[in-house]
Every structure is written in C-alpha cells, then in structure tokens.
Amino acid sequence: MTSAGEYAAAGVDLARADEAKARIGAAVAGTRTALSVGKVGAFGGMVRVPPGMRKPTLVLSTDGVGTKVLVALEAGRFDTVGEDLVNHSVNDILVHGATPVAFMDYVAGDGLGVEQIAGLVDGIARGCRNHGMALAGGETAQMPGLYRPGTYDLAGTIIGVVEEDEALHGDAVAPGDVLLGYASTGLHTNGYTLARRVLFDRLRLGVHDPLGDTGRTVAEALLAVHQSYFTSVMPVIRRVHALAHITGGGIAGNLVRVLPAGCEAVVDPTSWSWPRLFAILQQAGGISTDEMREVFNLGLGLVAVLPPESVDAARRAARDAGVTTWPVGEIRRGAGPAVRFADR
Image 1: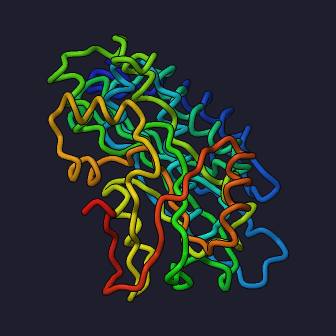
Image 2: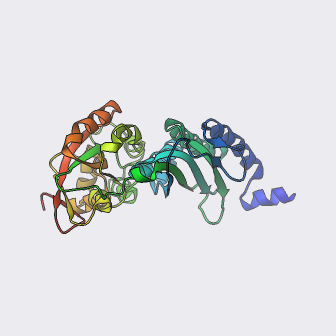
Image 3: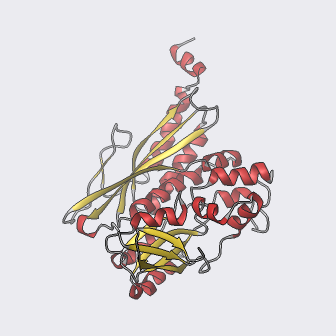
C-alpha cells in the first residue's frame, strides 16, 4: 500500500481533500471584493482597509454555531449552518458599529464527503456575498479519532472596521433611552442543547416530523437561518446609543454588557409575543420562564438602545429590511448596570 493509501486507511483521504479544495476555491473566488489582495489558496488571506477612513479600527470576533450542527447532520443539510455562522459573526461586530470586510472559516471533522464540505463552505460564501465581504481563506481539517465518523464542528473569525470615534461601546446610553427589539427567525445559534433534549428526547420527534401547530417540520424550525441585522441597523447607526446581540445568556445576559454604570434596563415582557417554537419548548420541557429567559432569545435577536426621537427612524429602517421591531422597554437610572423584567 502506498503512503497515501496508508493515510486514507487511517482516515484521511487526500484525493477527496483535493477535490473539496477545488470546490472551496470556487466558492472563495466568488466572494472577492475590491478590498481583496493576493491569490485564492494562499497561506494567508489579505484584505485592504477601506480607503478614506480617518482612524480605522479593526473589530474582530470568533464564534461557532454550537450544537445546531447536530440538527443539520440529522437533517442532511449543510449549507444553512454556514450562513448562520456568518450572520452571527456579522451581528457580533455590528453591535460596535463595524462594517464587515473579511471572514475566515474553520471546518473540522471526520469522514466528511466532498458534498458535505462544499455545502458548508457554500453557505459561508453565500453569507459573505450577502454582506459584500470577502471570504479571505480558512481551514478544513479531517481529524479521525478526535471526532466521531461523519461529525464536524464549524467556527469562523470575522474582521470588520469602524472609525475609532464612531465605535459603539454603550457609554452614550442614558436614562430615558428606549429599548427596541428586533425579531429573531428562531433559535438562531443558541439553546440547541436544551431544545434538542426537549424535542428529540422528551417528545421523541424526528427532524422531519411536524412541529406542533407551527406549520413547519422540526428541521425547518430549528434550521431557520440566523437573522443578520446589518441592513436593518446600518442606515440609522449614528442614531443608536448601543446594540446588544441576543445570543447565549438571553436578553438580560447580553443587554447588560452594553450598559454603563448607573443605568438599569427595564424590559416589558408583554410588549411582544414569543414565537410558537419557544412556547412549545417551554410547555413540553416544563421549563420555567426564568430559565427560558436565560437560555433563549424568545423572539428578539437584537436589542437597540436609542433616544426616543430616533425610534421611528430605526423602525422604518428595519421594516424596509423586512425585520419586525417592537419597543420593549426603557433605560432608567439605577444601581446598574443591570437588566430586569418588569414582571419581577
């Protein structure tokens, strides 16, 4: 047996890897922008800082999509979680007012086929193109022994840029500001361990089974693509005092991160309705409201903090981007930073 054959027998097929690289290269080439520098397939990805900026500041974030990949595996879908990864990352730097310029992905697993790997990267590339952002490079690693056969993990790093004196840090937040909630498309990329336990273990549903009265299958509900709020918020970014991306930790756990000392955010839980998915999870799982609030976004994927006179403009911008919003509370003077729900 040749050395390449020995490597394949050990679990790494170089021929299949080369085929996947060719597919990936085509996807990456389709995301190149005017800021792209260098060649596709080089050891490092390069992008220029956008011209004309006075004091450009890079904003970077690294994240993954958690156990949502297990639902995608079960459903045989690979492109949606790639787009999730990009959109999640865009939102993470959007909260600082940054525009995305480049993305790097990392796919690691065991025994992934060419179509699976290409599907993941196709989704990532689609998310990058949607934001005019270069997929500057990445890494695909087959690691038998570390991963179970057929499983994988997915992570990415985003690079954005913002003028240093225009970056959002939350220091402009003041009593009297309004909390504006932006609708989520579902779980986004958080809470899947608990959701899977309720739906698969307790209710014994399969991914292709109907999910209650939602009109969707379990897979359709759980794999709904994470909403990007870039086009909803950027037109009014100068009017915003702070933004909180509602991820792990829920509304309170993320909103508190952008509040200055002496400010308390009071959230009115009656100002919007939970999507049916969350109600089903709570009822079937016997989950307390407090725990639901700690784990899930409950229908709000982003919360903006802005002065009252800017609310109408922010809502119009979101509506133009196809995103529903609700005023969901206010900032009050308090011993914070702190967040509380008005029913407590």
